[in-house]
Length: 156
Image (cartoon, rainbow, N blue to C red):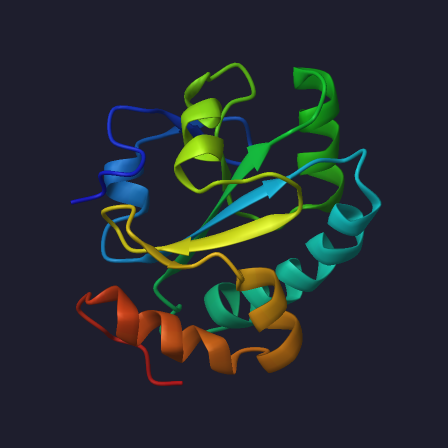
């Protein structure tokens, strides 16, 4: 059912390849379009880290949420540095994967940062994830989860 990244390979922070079908199954997915050269991105990424940590790493059970970073950096090296220095313990589309261009087009991304919240199948829940996290904090996750139509174990 994880159609948005079906057939692709994602990376984790350790540089290991991850199968999206397994990693994103039964989760709300935040596709994070961002770049290290972008000051608003560098401003929002720590906010997203805190949000992710509270929901996923400190949640009991962990919230059904995963972030996939899609880089607009100018090189693999720039992406890796930004990913390792500032990002949470989430996943990333490899910089060399041209699928990022399809994603930019599919979700009509004209500027970064942009956090697009999608269902497992890639249908958009909102393209205003960044604003919703800033305005509503953790409360916005419940709204996304209800819209995602997935089996829920979230108690928050």
